[in-house]
Length: 116
Image (cartoon, rainbow, N blue to C red; front, side, top):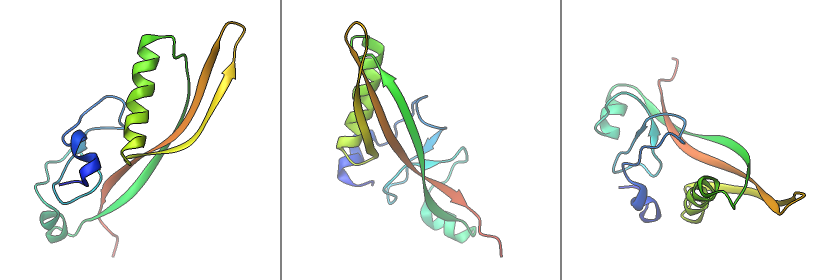
């Protein structure tokens, strides 16, 4: 099972991720994978290893827009629970109101077969 702060997301699939996610009970982060893997033992037996990789994002959100607000909260919830990493937030002044620039990293694992 992933660490307890990520348990609420266990088995999550969402188009806002970089691809389909595989969740294994003994791996802290979701694995970016399209192949069915049942365990880390299976990975090791087949000569694969897991490596962490990060994807950087930056976006300006209009928090008066319901869709932007929902996406912003989706990201901040995952930051608060340790899955995503907060980089920077900046209020961007506009002629009417303001917007928020958010920079963050989404953390995943990927399956790699080392070259021998």
